[in-house]
Length: 170
Image (cartoon, rainbow, N blue to C red; front, side, top):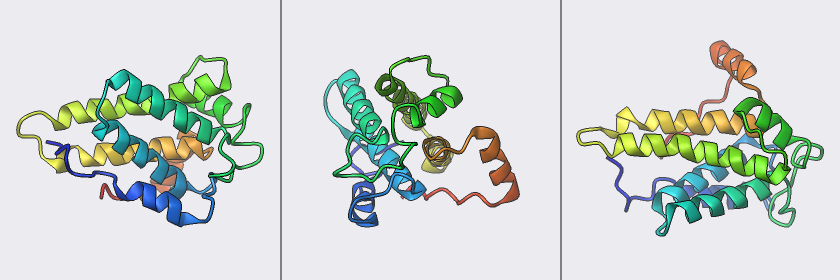
């Protein structure tokens, strides 16, 4: 069971800030920390779930589209409309036409995947080792997508043992 008072991803914001002066959106560790922080916000923020999801999705979509250049260094040609949003929509199945809405939808899909794990983790008798790996897998999948690695290549990297291991849950 998830303890809602335990900061599951509390180090994520610090990891983003400490990575560089302005974190580089082409660095998988920055994307991974950003996604873990989004999940932390999603699982611990008080308020209406729909409002929380919308805020997290909008904020992260803007970041991934390079709309926060004073905070994050975007990858030219990638973290902009026509780059990450088209690639992510293709591999995650978003039919949204507007780049910002595409990326919002992709973040919402990730939060939906996490929601399923949170529900499972809340069931009586479910131990952390029965669900933590699922969170790690979700974060890894979306990290790869948001740095431009398609699922078939992800599978090859995983089989070859050349994929970087996902950051542990804590």
